[in-house]
Length: 420
Ligand code: ATP
Ligand code: MG
Image (spheres, rainbow, N blue to C red):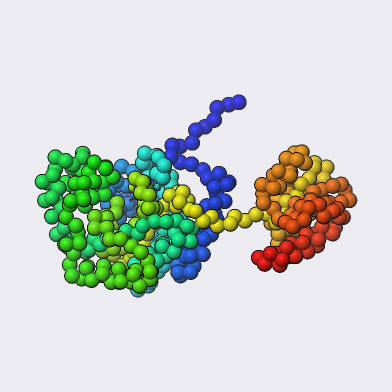
């Protein structure tokens, strides 16, 4: 045998069993997007590097050290998308989606960040993102948070919702000074990363994942004390809306996000048993990003779910589709089996055929694993047998030409008897 080609570190395929679980969960998410009036947008994976430098921020983990950036053959600097919001805004500006219009959008797909791979942290990972444009008040924030909360509940995921307000850029400027004063006093206790951030983007220090800094950061000034009366009223109204909807939340006064574009509300969902890499979904309001990328002034709010982290927490598995009929066969009768399968599919059924020439025993094992509602077996040129249905075994052989009608009859009867 020749040697295998290794995959890229932190980049994994989804094998069929996992892909089926994902697809079932994605069906739930898609249905919920419809229930809230959100529409799908499909976005490119490649963008100009400049987009992320401008939108995500130069002094962020993503842009400083996590992006897959390379020169295109004509010399342009391109990057694999590390997140979806910047590309969504760019596409919306270019496509004229924001001119005096309200938009509720969702997207999903792979994102790329060059991080140290570990549980819940990969180099290719997947996000499901939700973005709403054209609505400035806290009501839309409450609506997208209600959507996220419902989605987690429907999948049996238990998580705490943390919310905070970063206010307006003016509030942040006042807070920034207070934070820098505090951090300067404790400079000798900061790690190397934080010293660098202190100089270039001090709010980012609060986002440090170094446990040694937790106590120091817990004593830092809280942004709430620096919010303008308008920002406070906005945040208070959001909390009223959430309470009225019965959405449980906690105010986390030092919550900031890893991207620069947020204003006012930020939020995240974190599982109860908090691990370091545990945030499953996160987002917030980003009112200046659309204009910052060349569009008109457009308020915006959104969040993204990390699909790998979500899938690790799902306890209520949505049912996966199973075949209606599994057909066991042997090489001389494969043509017969294929034709029957096509006939059943013409009638709208899901059919799996066993074409690997295995023993009856191993075919039966495979049939059972498939979860098929009816198992058939090719007997000879004249006959095919129904080996098993959901309610009976060995219901006997019949001529090939009658098989489709008989199967429809059986499935119809079983469907009505178990009330599906
Ligand atoms: P973290 O603090 O864990 O690094 P982040 O702040 O970088 O997360 P966001 O940019 O807000 O994350 O992305 C939203 C979600 O995407 C995260 O909450 C997480 O579920 C998921 N996510 C982010 N980076 C990765 C990764 N490298 N691997 C898997 N999931 C990720
Ligand atoms: Mg990160």
